[in-house]
Amino acid sequence: MNEIIVSICCQTYNHVGFIEETVESFLMQKTDFRFEILIRDDASTDGTTKIVQKYAFKFPELIKLLTYEENQFKKGVKPFPDNVKRAQGKYIAICEGDDHWTDPLKLQKQVDFLEENEEYVLICSNYLNTETNTEVKEVAGKFLDVTPFNILYSNPIGTLTVLLRTKYISSLKLKDYSMGDYPLWLHYATKGKIVKASDYTAVYRVLEESASARTNIKKRKKFESDVLIITKEFLAEFKLSKTEKREILRERYRNLFKILIETKDVSFFYYQYKLFLTIKFFNILDYKILLFGIKKIVF
Image 1 (tube, rainbow, N blue to C red):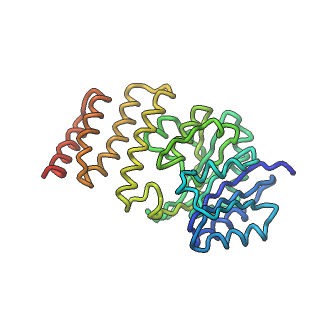
Image 2 (image 1 turned 180 degrees about the horizontal axis):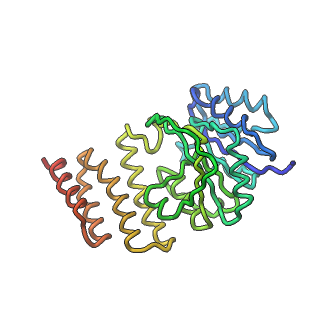
Image 3 (image 1 turned 135 degrees about the vertical axis):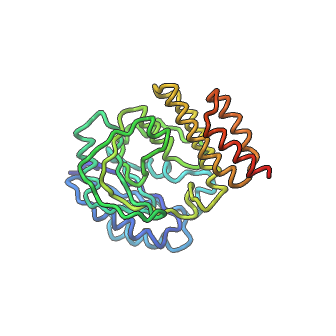
């Protein structure tokens, strides 16, 4: 019981309205093993720091707090890699300070699965997205493998639901992308199998500062551009058919096209040309998107 099995990595910055619910969702976890809560506060200015300090003082054996007087993200320090260096657990769970868990057995069920299935390196689950505000019902006990194609095509993995094996994380070198989770999942997919449980275990909040925030065009453009770059980099890591590769690249280009057309960005034509060179031919939908882009951007 002295061994730490799970390290919960929580990165927070100016989450004063959410952080209490987040930490409480960690504290409510019912497990037959020991876990630690690693909270990293990046010099919050809205009162978040005082709240996490209060929790760290109240639960000193459980919560390990890392705070900064100056914001490290502005200096180029990525929050998660900086925080995960402190992890002592066999497994790592991730949850940002504006999200929270809803299932008190989340960690127990996920650890049980990975302990019983050594070939799996990561397990995730379903979650509620506050942007869509969809009502969901838990359907527990079902598991579906997440293939490299699934991740490259649509990335069905929610960061706040993940539990992964710690031993593989140090070999990943994160570049200056607008997201860290997508390349992390692809990295783990090169190490073993990934599974998704049908349970709904968490709530994800879509905020303006989120990397993929739909209301911020600049961030959306950077996000989709990075996803395309990462996708191309990892395609060679997996044994995929030509048809699968084409489907993946088309989907990624199209997601970027939507934003470029919306903002009347002429680089849309450059990426259309890149798509043609990559895929070698267009289908009907490609031509429709091209014509729509010409109409929207030129006229």
